[in-house]
Structures are given as C-alpha cells and as structure tokens.
Length: 301
Figure (tube, rainbow, N blue to C red):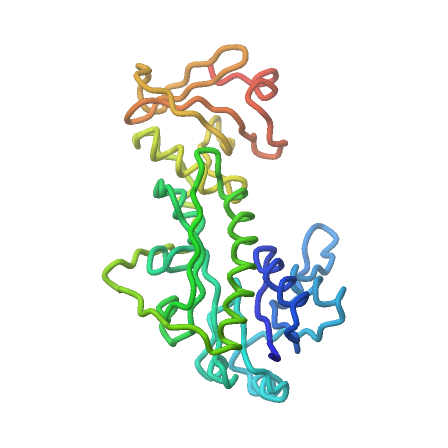
C-alpha cells in the first residue's frame, strides 16, 4: 500500500521505521515546521523529518492543515492510507482523502485517557496497566472505532521516560499489524464505550507544582508521571527544585511540607505518609542523586 505518515516527536519514529522497513511504500511524511532553538537560534528539525531526510522520503510541513495547497499536495500522492502517530488534530477534509481512510495510534487503552498526555496521566492516576490503541479517525478527537489494542503492565519503577519508550516500541508493532490488517481487509471495528472515557489533558505548569497536603502515593505518582519532563517541582528560598525519583515511607511522623535531612537523605512529609527524595535538581543546576545534592545544599537552617 501507498502510505502517508503523519507525526512529529521521537515517539512516532519507531512506527515510521517499521513501516519503512516493511513491503509498504511511504509516499511522504507530514510533520511540524522547523523551529529555532537555543541561544544561537539554530534551526532544528522534528525527529520525523530527520528520519525522512536520512531515508530520502519527501517531507511536507504545513503551517495550517486546512491550507488548500497542502490538501492538493496530499491528494496528488494518491495514497491508500494515512497513518497518524503523535501529530496534530486533522480536519475531516484531510483524514477523508485516502480510499482506505486514516488511523491514529494513541498511547492508552481507549476510551481511557483521551487527550494530549495519555502516558503521563496513566502514571499520575496510579494505573497498573496501560497500552496502545489504533483507531479510525473521526471528527471528534480520540473517539473513532478501535482496530487494535495491546496491553502492557506498568512496573513500580516506570516513569514517563521509561513508559514512553516501551509504548513507542509496542506502538510500532501495533501500527504495522494494523496496516497489514487494513491491507488484507481482515479486521473488525469496535465501537468505543463513551461511558468509560476519561480525560488526559495537556500538562500545565500548575499541575507540576507539588501540594504536600496530598498523600505520599498521589505525589509519588505525580512525580513519576512528569519525570524526566517537564518535572514535578516545589519552591525553596525562591528557587524551583524539581523532583524526579522518590520512595514512599509509611508511618513517618512528619507534617506536610516538613523536611527531615541527614548527610545523605531527605524526607518530606505529606498529607498521608511521607516521601524519601532520591533524585532532584536545583534551578539552573544538573539533576543529581540525593547524596550528591546534599553535599552542597541544606534544607535545614
């Protein structure tokens, strides 16, 4: 089949790579515009564009998805199928172009965690399993009929970084299998149960701020869901301190927000139980294990 692949971040690269290595043809990729980053305002490409350039795949980078010249370009490729992984919300005018439709890979077991940040929210909510879903695109975001789902356990050690990478690889396999099923017309669509839906909205700075009145378990899961990026944080002496790794300590008599520090350990009280801080980062400094951090810093006056 002739495929146009749409995606932007690292999460989408394994899926594109799997399709590129298959017997299907990638006619073009659609990805985000180039950006200027850093002090020197160096122009950087999206990970999907970098892969495409290395493998001589044509690249489309529309500013607006409803731009008629862009839509004309898409139609000229005569692709059989559009595959979407971690991209923008497509207008109906775009996702209805190919004869065999358009499908999306989502990083949750839909209808759970519909939205921009499904991996983070599964961790924040303390889920023990998650997975990926492929579904046909419809006008309403993340509501289309399901083609395939694959589950994965969430380990106690998982954070956003590790779970993101696991789901990226799992997703690549599911995307390839979905394309093969569509090619052979050997699949049944399953309607989503909207009564089971839960939201996974975009991560905001307000969400990232730790409220020590919450239970240690809630804060621990928030930290996991935001590690390594963007990072859960609190402020101390007007400086932002991000926390990346913690351990729950039960039956420790520390008030919410109160700190107990030794030469090599730090515990902070929560609404229920407390947290031992294992890895953190002072604003403007490197991320450090607690032993290194406390060599040059004290939370206790």
